[in-house]
Image 1 (cartoon, rainbow, N blue to C red):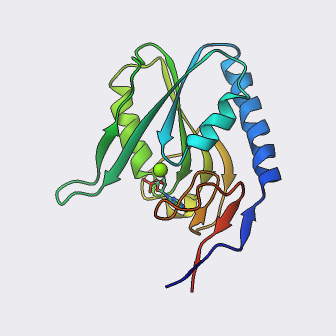
Image 2 (image 1 turned 60 degrees about the vertical axis):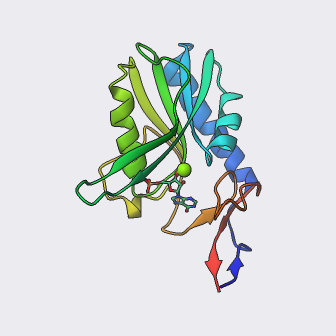
Length: 174
Ligand code: IMP
Ligand code: MG
């Protein structure tokens, strides 16, 4: 089956506007307070890099790599492939994700990170697909809401490919 990525859903200019808006909201809300930014690998590496350069407060940047799976006897389990290097106790923490789909990954991650007793824990996502949500999870900061399509580019991949596109494209299988 061939994959077609010709259809642009979100242009690079729209992504830049989104970055300006989301960073302005963060700068307003955190108002100069130090922030620990937790980028979720691999998809959020570009969004994290673009966002932190627009933030005005002091930031510590770290990354986690996680995945979720639905086990035979559970509603969902989190696998941590790479954990944080910093201690987040009593810190203001912002999880930065590429896209929220079912919401399973971030709701499990949020529960885990809460146990480390941060002062606050919020979620910022570049893209949100609320139509596919299976758990109750609403991001505190959302870049762009998208329809129920599989998208690539700006860090998002299909089998490791297309992360380098500077716009967002819809994947069509033909
Ligand atoms: P969920 O919210 O737990 O379902 O998982 C979200 C993760 O699935 C994201 O971090 C992405 O890695 C991946 N994902 C979901 N939708 C897409 C998409 O449209 N394109 C690329 N990756 C996606
Ligand atoms: Mg991901």
